[in-house]
Amino acid sequence: MPLFFLAILIEWVYAAKKHLPWYERRDFFSSMGVLLLTGLVDLVPKILGIAAMFALYEVSPLKGVFERQWWSWVLLFFLDDFVYYWFHRSNHELRFMWAGHVSHHSSQYLNYGTALRQGVGERVIKYAYWLPLPLLGFDPVMVVIMMSISLFYQFWIHTRAIDKLPSAIEYVFNTPSHHRVHHASNVRYLDCNHGGTLIVWDRLFGTFSEESSEEPVVYGLTKNLESKNVLTIAFREYRLMLQDMARAERWSDKLRYLFMAPGWSHDGPDKRARTLRREQQTSIV
Image (cartoon, rainbow, N blue to C red):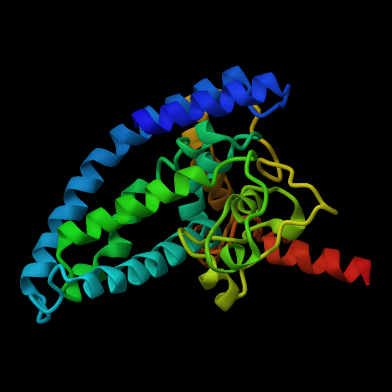
């Protein structure tokens, strides 16, 4: 945390000296409030998740196969990053998970303060995604360390201060340029670049989008939340989701509001990211 706040201070001073509108005071303090709330909400799920990891590791038929050799760490790095990709992608493509993740995207600014504005509700289900790793024989301590390294890496890519890096790095790794796309509300960028440390999973599974100078990134949501209230930022989407479920008469539609992507509606236009992008491409053609 001291390193994170030092990075925030440096970025804030740099932006102020260059007269760059990267920070807004109320938005920043909202991010800090969400950070504190996330820490509280995360406490019990983290304890339960790590306890489950140790329990699964003890019954794993592969226990002892992956000790702390260098090659075990390398293999775990790729598996952890693969799991993170699908966890993060799920946060954007399942509405009940988006409701817990949306707070991270609610800021109309991208800076190191926004990096700490984590998804609050997503913490409840997060650790379940990593449970297969100790079942595969990886020491839970190694798993938690690798998760932490990944999150540490992802902090530095939440910035506008770093332009594109050499093409070889941009092709393999998640970079500030790729992550700016991820935080965009532009239709062409929606729900893209879910990778943690690597961007190769997005390239493989069709969720990659390049940052283009022809269309500057617009940060925030397709319908921005103007409130700076921490509880509103953290939980408003749950209320909206429940309201949509209440409007639906059929149970199948109620369930779709939980498991379809954000923007799906049983009685209105389809505003899911893929639909909007398809319509945009059709109109251009």
